[in-house]
Length: 202
Length: 379
Image 1 (tube, rainbow over the protein chains, first blue to last red):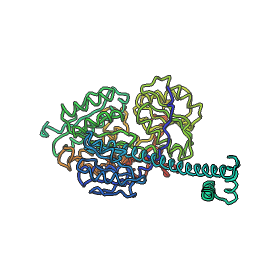
Image 2 (cartoon, chains in turn yellow, purple):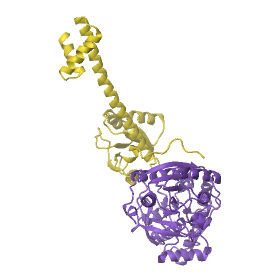
Image 3 (spheres, chains in turn purple, yellow):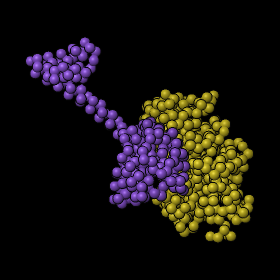
Image 4 (cartoon, rainbow over the protein chains, first blue to last red):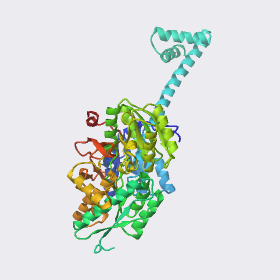
């Protein structure tokens, strides 16, 4: 008799968003795509279908499902080159697992794959994994951006301080208080004050 | 086997598994329905011939039996399996032979196989109503006890969400290995009592159920204040309990043999006439019964039992089942059912205390369940 160390919590965001998730299926109309579309509807997603592969992806889908196949190599590459951080995650449909196909999977930037023949089992998992990886990546990017901004500010302040110390013969502590004082007096950011000082002194 | 002799159909129910008692009722009901179909002329004059597989207790035994039915007996369809683990073990066999499985047991949802039809409840047809009723009548603190496999985990996840929606609390959650010893069940129950929940939600199955209700009685607990509530406890479990052990506890299911309607009385009468006056009838048996009739209706319409034709004909198929009019939802291949809740009385009978006013459509892929205002508002 043991209680589990971790308890299953409430549904994660990823699970909840399945209902109404906009899935763009890039696939020719055929029996397999009909199966795919009907299972997407069954699990509560809102699928739309399009073919041939577009050159660019819009932001109006939450996940894109597309075949990763040799005869589409150039089109896939073009699509992948046009991806940016706002582009939705991709789930590939693969028929082979040979190195050439795997390379294409990597180049396409897929964060999930399903296999041919397409069957219902496994689709839900891949959608979830792709969305979760995408969300984590978006969060990481946002964090990196914030750190970059902060780093730029910190390095400007450091430059301004160095200039003040060199030109006015004051200590680092005094330089810091000077910048802080001006920022408070003018109600502007340390970074802006530092920039003004750099402009004045260099 | 040529249709001139009959259409052979497979039965895959174990007499040895943890849930054997309920599976036997499902097998009985399947045989009864096959007889009724044949008495009504079979499929265009050709009778259905039941082929029963010997099934051991474990999932691999079910898989082996499915292989025997498909490959040696060449049946196009199988009625059976019970626990989710046994359905999962059999489905790859069914899919690879392009056969069909008809599954007549409640389960946790999140499944669709083009080769499977589901005639038991999914959570939007039983958990939602049960949680709503129990919160309304007993309070919003609950203790979970269940077995270590997929159904208890997922069923508890949904129950937890429903309780949290109502501002309630899951005071603890314990999973025992299947076939747990009686002492362990008693220990868990003691722990539950110490936490003072308003109800104990049990996802124990089969023979383990009986241990829970016995332990409850031995501890002198009061079902009027803190009942065991369940989706799985049924007439076969109650048959193994005394009235003192069973009375006052609550189960949600689409069918109870106490249901006093003409189709229900007819079914219960025919079942008991054939299998004995004292033989318990379960919701699983009722689903097993009506799914055979649905197959027969569809086969007559399709003119064959060949899976692709049958699947098409089953889309939207309806039957006046003992529980009420049931309809197959072609999109999910699950079934619209009539949620009910019953309390076990001093005669060890399930007394129906809540019945949905209409059949509820199956939503097997529902992530967010909401409490049922109708069941919440009941007096």
